[in-house]
Every structure is written in C-alpha cells, then in structure tokens.
Length: 183
Image (cartoon, rainbow, N blue to C red; front, side, top):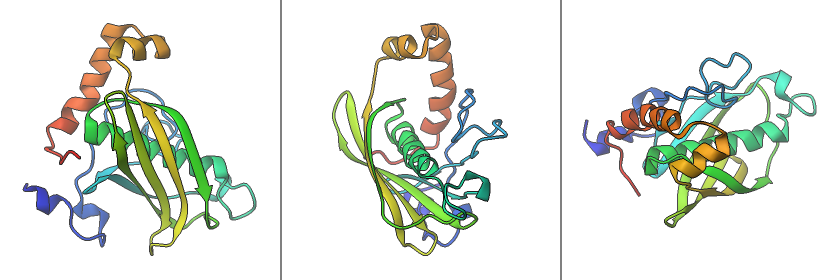
C-alpha cells in the first residue's frame, strides 16, 4: 500500500491502517484482554495516531459526564501509541498538562488523536486531543515523554532486560513492517 493510500478522509475508521498491538501487559487503555479496560485500538494518521471510542456511563464522575481521570487516560494512551508508532520506541510519561475544554459525554463517539510536537534524543513532547466525532474539541494535553534505554526501562519496570527486549521486539517489529511515515 502506498503511503498516500493509508490516510484517507476521516469518513471511516475502517479505511485506516490499524497499528498492530502485541502489548502483553494488562494495560487499562490498550490491552484487548483486560475485560475492565478501555480496549482501545489505534490507527496511523499522517502526523501520529488516533482512536475512536465510546466511554460507558459507569466511567462517569457526574452523571453522563466522563470522569476527568478517564479523559486524561485517553490523552496519555494516544500519546504513548504515537511515540511507539512514529518512533518505534517505548516512552515513559514524565509530565502531562491536561485542559478540559468542554464536557465529555458518556455513550457518545469520540476521536482521540496524538501528534509529536517536539523531539529530542531522549525526550519527546506529544500534543493529544479528545474531540467529538463532529470535530468539537473537548480536551487536550501536552505530555513529555522520556525515551529511556532498554536497561533503564527494565530497571524502572522491574523486568529482566532480556525478557523486556523480547516484549519490545514483539511490539515494535510488526509496527515497523507496516511502513509508517516517520516525522
């Protein structure tokens, strides 16, 4: 598939290339096996990645309004997958500043997007948004990500480095094989 065919209009999510997700951990945001999680699926976009989702009523603060922590999770998760899909690296959030602009209603379709806005050797800044499917901006965040070495990441996660290397390879290699456009 040619790169210009990967990014058609926003009319149908099914026309986008899904980012392979072989993440083995029980992530609340992206694990397909976490029955209590959001089970988000991500797709490549021209500048990063996105997901579309509907947040159920049981994840509200006020009745009918999605809890702010869930909104922050959406913004953080799309930023993580933006780093993974665009840089083929696993990052760690070091800072996230979230702005809640409009109420995010439960049981309505949302579009959550991430885009790298600044990149250095060991640090990345990602701009993320939550919008209604019609395009109304509901929340946005700027997050800073540390891009640690595998040995540092293994220490942080308390995982043997050789096991972490296998996990990261299982996650990154299928993404690299899709031939994404890098920033």
